[in-house]
Length: 145
Picture 1 (spheres, one colour):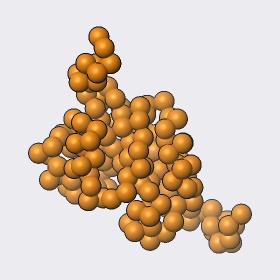
Picture 2 (tube, rainbow, N blue to C red; picture 1 turned 120 degrees about the vertical axis):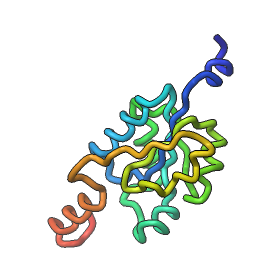
Picture 3 (tube, rainbow, N blue to C red; picture 1 turned 90 degrees about the vertical axis):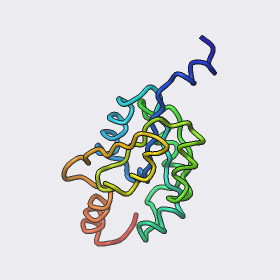
Picture 4 (tube, rainbow, N blue to C red; picture 1 turned 90 degrees about the horizontal axis):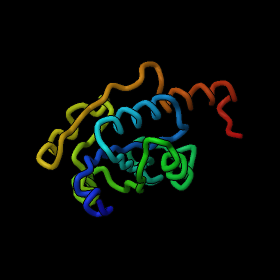
């Protein structure tokens, strides 16, 4: 089967995130998302988008986060997500069959069900990038390296 024909029959799953200070919760969602299809595409939030949505710059640059996520075994392709409002365009561009989001976004992307299946996966309990950053800052006295 040629590659173009194979891609047409693949079930494409797409997910999005900042993926800063990579941790087990990130790995869990990537593995669980990949299990829902044949090909996993990941949109990594740009530095500017992260600043807008979280009011803080990521610890790792978008270039570093793209490299980290892109080299994870479950991930087939990564791209830079520049806008939360462009999700439908990203779904169309990557011909996604399934959109996977963490359940902290529950209901926020239901309007995209016209484009593809929308699945909200439970977050890994007791872990978040924000809490890791807060612990590191408290241990270091609030100072960077």
